[in-house]
Every structure is written in C-alpha cells, then in structure tokens.
Length: 549
Ligand code: NA7
Image 1 (cartoon, rainbow, N blue to C red):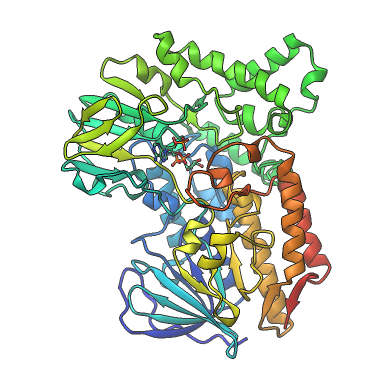
Image 2 (cartoon, rainbow, N blue to C red):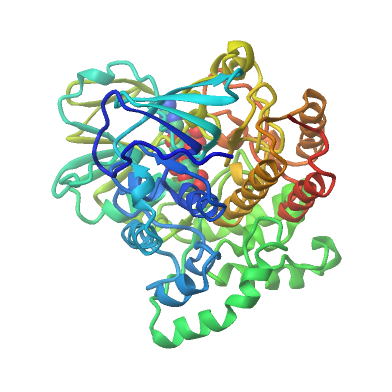
C-alpha cells in the first residue's frame, strides 16, 4: 500500500478546501481513536484523525458537566498497549472525574506524539464509497476532502445527545443545557432555581453534585433508577504501587470476564445457596462500593426472573432505608424493571439528596411535562419556575454517531436510510454494503453497551488493526462481510438476546429511548470471551465469511 502524505494536518487549525489522500482515516479522537491511530501508525500507514472537538478525549471531552465521573475503576479504565504509560501515569482515585480522565487522554496524546495526525474542530459530514478507486471520499465541515482506503469510526457508543421534543423548547428565557454539551467555561448554578430532567447515570451524578449549591432543585423523573453507593478512595503511592504490582494479572483477567471487568462472577448458582448465604453474598458484593453486584455477582440476574426479583428487592430495601419520607421513597424505588436490566449507575449521596429541603421530585408518570414555558416547566399539575433547565436525557446510543454522518456505501446506498428500517452489522465491526468501513462501539458487539468500554474497545482496535495488516500484506484493497455472514451473526445475537430480561426491558440498551428507532438489543450479550472467540475464529479461518478482493 502506498503511504501518500496527507496535506498539512495540524491540530486546531480549520482547513478550507484542502484535499488529502491517506491510508486510513479515523473519525474521533477519544479512547478508541487515539489507540487506533497509535496502532495503525505502527504498521507504517499514513493515518489521519478528525474530531469535532477542540481536544482529545471524546466522551470525556464533551461530558464535563458537574459530577461527571467513570463508573469503572481507574485500573481497568486505561490503555494496556504501553508498559511505559502504565508505569508513568498515576491514578489519583478509584473512580476518576472528567478532569482526571481528560488529563489522561491529553497525556497519552502528547506522550505518543499523536496530535500531529489529528485535525480538531472538524466534523465529518459525509463519507462516500468510491468503488473504482476503492477508497472512501470523506468531506468535513471545514471544507476538506479526504480520500481514505480504510475508514474507521471511533465515535463512541454515546456521542449523539438526545434533546426531547418538548413543546415550547425555544421559548425558555433562562439557561437550557444538555449535559453532553456542557459549556467548557461552566454554568453558574449558585443560588439558582434549577430543574434536571432525567435520572439515568448522568442525571444522578449531576443531581447529587449540584444539590448543595443551588437555591432549589426540581428533579423531573420518568423512571426511577437503581444505583449502588460508590466507595471512592483517593490513592497514594502505596496504593498505586500495589495496583501496578497487580497489572500483569489485571491485564489477563479483563479478557476472561463477561463484561471486561477484572473480577470473576460468583461461581455458585444463586438458588443453590441458602437464603442466609445469598443474603451474605449480596451484602459482601454491595459493600464493595462498585458495580460488582451487577457485573460480577450472579449472572442469572440477567436471565432468571426469580433471581432478578430477589436481588432487585435487596437493592430496593437499601434505597428505601436512605429516604426519610416513605411516600417519596416509594417513588424513587424502581418498580417496573429488574436490577441490572438497565444500566446501573454508581451514586455518591444521590438518594440522600431527597432528604434536603431544597430538593423536590416531580414524578412524570403522575404529572407529565406539558411544555417548557418562558419561565420554567409546566407539568399537568402546574408550572414550576426555573432559572436553569438541565437535560440529562441521554443519547441515541450505538447508532446516532454513525447516522449523523451521510455514509454512502456500494451503489450509493445510504446507511442512514437503511438503519431507519433495520440496524445491521457484522459483529459490530463491519457492515455489508460498506466495504473497508470498520466500526467500533457499533451495535451487536459488547462494546456497544454492556461492557467495560475500554476493554471491549481495545479488543476491537486490535482486531481491526490485525485485519488491516492482513489486507495490506496480502495486497487486498477491499473487504466487506458477506450478506449471509451478517444475517447469521444477527440471528445468533437475537437468539442470545431473547433469553435475557435485558432485551425485554425499555431502555437505551434496546433503542426504546428513541421514538421510532428499530428495537433490538444493542449489545452482544454472549459475554466478552465468547465474542473474542468469534472474532478470533474469523481470523483463524482467513476471514471466512468476509469478501476480500
Ligand atoms: P440515560 O440513561 O438514557 O438516561 C436518560 C434519562 O432521561 C432517563 O431518566 C430518561 O427517562 C430521561 N428522559 C429521556 N427523555 C425524556 C423525556 N422526554 N421526558 C422525561 N424524561 C426523559 O442517559 P444518561 O446520560 O444518564 O446515561 C447514558 C450512559 O452514559 C450511561 O448509561 C452510562 O453508560 C454513561 P426514562 O428512563 O427513559 O424513562
């Protein structure tokens, strides 16, 4: 493959009417994009990255709202490709906030001199497959055209924020802001009357963080959420040394667990234990102050209704005990879904916030939002005056980042149009009809949702890199999955999904948060080891099921 130099890539400088030809173009300079750049550079390819943001970090660039923090511990929310990086980066706490996360990504970018191949402040508008050249023709918001043999999307599963179409949206005279587009200079909330719509992982973090500083906080809740109390120690030298000493084991362990964490699930079937043993085990898992009770507890939680109900009741009891007013507690305790069938957040004082005098809850199931007015939010029970409205209303997960780009495959077929009817991928890595397009965190891989994202995304980057290396070595210039391969992956995915309670629950995991979105479980739910094995098998069989030319 020829390595044609790109024209004057530079960071932070919008390009106008420039054109370039590269071997690989990566969209996104977050966790995945940076590692993909590093990996493809090592193959000797000419690589470019384009990102709409003004700096690296992806999710951790955009989500700078108050309280933004990881729910995966820092020792498994990192890159494993460089021993030097592991040695020189000092995690300050178990669960890092967006400031520390962003600092990590900036450090990685600088340490490996990645910025010289990244163009910031530039959004990819369209990508058209040119069959005769066997390249993608990509256009950006800054007027640049880039021809790339391989196009890799590193958009993150949660990069397209959802703004619900509330009536009167534009009328509000105060400040209205979505958490994923939080102004970098911050928003002054001190002494303000603030409304938060949404009680997912994001809403919970915002609410528990801002409650003490605002004059009043009104939480608009549509679905009550489970949450596990976070224990978040800060790390000193001794803890870091112990963590580093365990890195070899951690690095191995993450590949062996269902969702890419480093702890094995309980080995005994739930109902093989006595009620006392079950209770003691749940208490032990709960006391870990992590997501362990969800992702490394009893995996039957995801499939067995009786196990789900008993564990859910255990968690409900914990929530009830935190809220003084029993009527309020009843509203905050989830009743319509089982623990772990939707994304479980960690919390740090969230439920206690409702014991404060300046915090009130509006249950939207009882009194739905009618409209946004000039001065606040009107529900069916009347108007609530607000200075600031915070939308913690989530994302068009898995697909929204991709469909925001006008992607045209063979014969001009449009991904956006096709995915309105049915979302299809092969292992979340490629799509039939879109040759040489590699996707990360796309539907039907664990990386789309139900996984410690850094583990699953690093696996996808490695697979894509090895695949491109193979194509280059073999002198191939075109690859796409066969239609039958895609159909059989989807059939396998659906069969597994049908056995779970997750697929039967309304959430962004199934696309139910977006009106009109085709309903299908987003994340492959056979577990990371099974997914990795399926990916390895494709490689062992010389990319059987994929058409190489
Ligand atoms: P989520 O988990 O999708 O949560 C969005 C919240 O916003 C959730 O409580 C929704 O209620 C609520 N919502 C959405 N639309 C509306 C409307 N129209 N009216 C009222 N309430 C609404 O997004 P997050 O940002 O919290 O978390 C996304 C992921 O980021 C998270 O899972 C982590 O992996 C990181 P609903 O539950 O749909 O009734």
